[in-house]
Length: 168
Length: 100
Image (cartoon, rainbow over all chains, first blue to last red; front, side, top):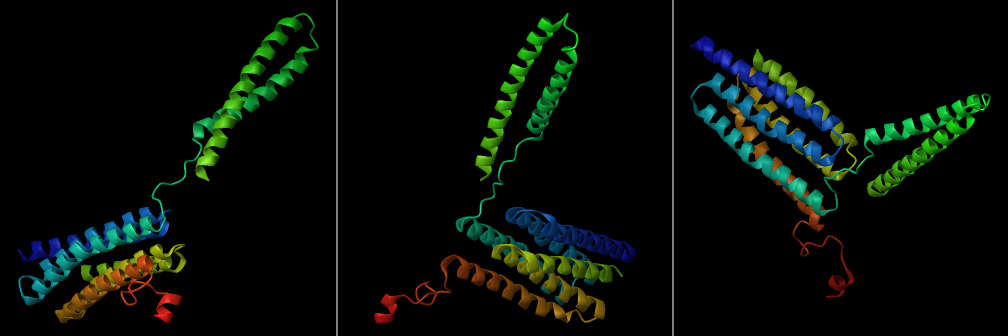
């Protein structure tokens, strides 16, 4: 029984420590005020609850454990309230939880491919001008393709500017 | 033994929170980090008491919890209204209050 209690207390303290360190890492690494609030919520609930539980199990039932339970319950109720108040005041004073929209990576890749194809076709056109037999046909095809390519490029460019406008 | 590990983890998390409090771009980041530091100090005091064999230190951590909560709300009120309740919530002395 003694052994089991000490193991339980140790596991609970370790879990709480892991939650604390993960929350602190998130507080340092996350990019945005509101995502940092998310990380602090992790620390304030899981970390505090598990470490207090570990100390409670270690202590057993006494006056000290009652005080520990008071500390745990107080922190469990007040720290989410404080975090919520921080988020509310930040939101009121103009911070937005919505990050600016970036251009999706697929569209960027498509634009790159279009320009690469165009340059390749120009090279092919130059090479084909040496052979006059199929000249007319290849020219027509190349012109058509170039037309569609430019249209696609224009489309992507338009999308890009729209994304930038939204971001600013 | 596990108490010492948890105490060291509290120290590491406290240093990381200090980093955020030092370089946080907005005052709300700093306030969030200071709140987290307060929570970590509460846990650290209780753990320190248990490690040193004097668990009466838990009383001090109760006091710290209350002070941390009230202090966070006081700073938030200062941010949002510009005052702490005196002068009707106005920090700056306007001309009307000077004359009247």
